[in-house]
Length: 152
Image 1 (cartoon, rainbow, N blue to C red):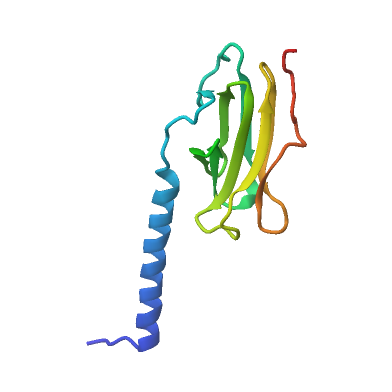
Image 2: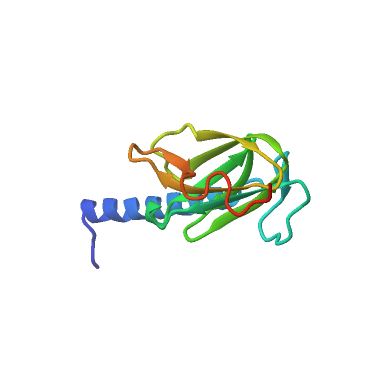
C-alpha cells in the first residue's frame, strides 16, 4: 500500500481548494443580476437604434488576461460581465449616467472605478476597458470618445 507524505497531501488539498474557489468565482461573475438599469433602452444584440437614444459600446482589451472579467454597472445597477473577447453594446436614454467597472474575480482595488457620462441623443460613446498601470480597471475613451459617426 502506497502512502503519501504530508507535503503531497497539502499540495493536493491546496489544488482542490483552488479549483473550488475558481469555480465559485466564475459562477459569481456570470450570475450577475441581468435587469436593465434605468436609462438603458436596449441591451446587447439590438441592431436598430431606438429613437432618441445614445449608443454605448464597451470593448474589453485582450491583455487583461483570459481569467479576468469586467463587471459593469450603469447607474449603480449591474449591467453585465464582459469576458475575454467580448464587447458590450446598449442604448442609453439621454441624460447623465454613472458607468462603473471592476475587475473580477480578484480585483486589486475593491472600489469600482467610475465615469460620469452625459449621454446626448443620437451620439455614440465608445470605451475600452483596460488597466491603468496602477491596478485599477478604467474605461478609456480615447478611441472614439465621445462621438464617432453619430447624427447631430
